[in-house]
Length: 329
Image 1: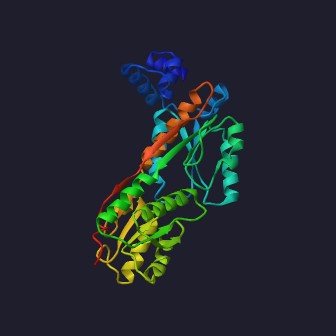
Image 2: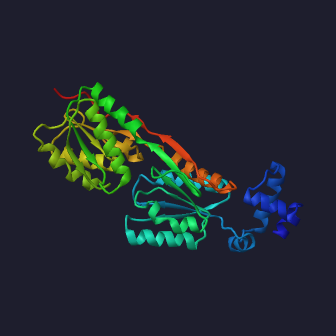
Image 3: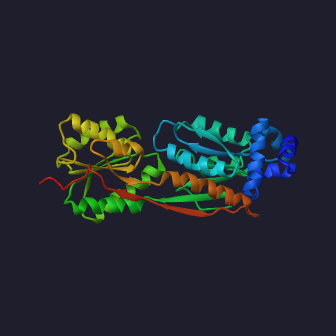
């Protein structure tokens, strides 16, 4: 760093500020420093910095499974916000496995992360005291009230759910089925409750109501129960886009036309939803903004003297595409 400072004609402290983005530096000075860094092929020694400052440059992000297309935009938003502040991200996934969850918590403490965003429903507050006792800030989604070292992001699923219900009512639908997410998943339970309550308020009896995993094959396996219902539904609400696309594939195989015979609505608005045939009507969750908000919540909380958390809110929105149409007479 001293050599970089000498070549750039600045102090080592200025080099540190440029590389760590901790203070405002003029564009001209920043350019000189970065040119010197490039010329000398200089890289920061993060281990030495940790020893010198007693703090790591790591923030943790915990998701359910890396293969689920729900999570990449969350990762992108969180990582972009962290990198803008000069921090790195330790990504962990639980695979819904209790033993793996315990290993993830230990890994986060051992890695001395500054804060961690937990965006999976497989971890609740009862499993995180080790993080908080280690002084690690935590942000949850739809789980708890804020407190010391704990913030919460509330995703307003009810807003998008009610928009979806009003949409199908306007299309003349009176018979609806629901393929919800897993009964053990708190987010899936919240969405299911909002759907059932909203449908009943509009005089629509939801039947059948089926629980399934967040996988394409699970949506497909639920279709037989829907097609054999005494009063076949004209619209199916699905607990995720993956469930919806699995159901659409199975319905097509059974000779059911979408949306002419049956309308389908998903939740999440993953990138594949637009590519489905027909393109999927779905409730959009602002996942990249969720990732950015999660990092910003941690960063702000850890800067406060008392490190008290706060509540943050995100809204969902119905995106109408071509998988919904007027109810078949």
